[in-house]
Image 1 (cartoon, rainbow, N blue to C red):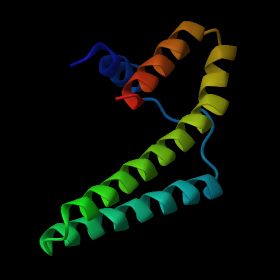
Image 2: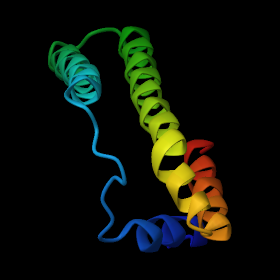
Image 3: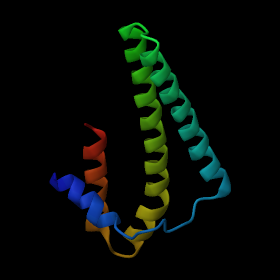
Image 4: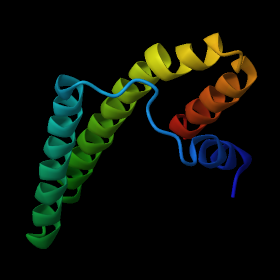
Length: 108
């Protein structure tokens, strides 16, 4: 296990959102994830139907991009709520370590 993964796991174990997501926020994220789910099902069909490799690769790229957008959306909310509260509570170093670990994970 990489150090950054350990930081993420240890820092988040048992934690909940400091500020619960609104119904609108949940709906937005869930809708995006459902679209990704549909794209993945489409990919499965493409493989089953022996579609051209480049078509599959293009669709894979679209799925990865969509997931990153969901992740950045969640990360943005985290920065504006959970991290802000943690910094105000005096946990700056922990917040910075957690943020760096997530950025490291996303840059792979």
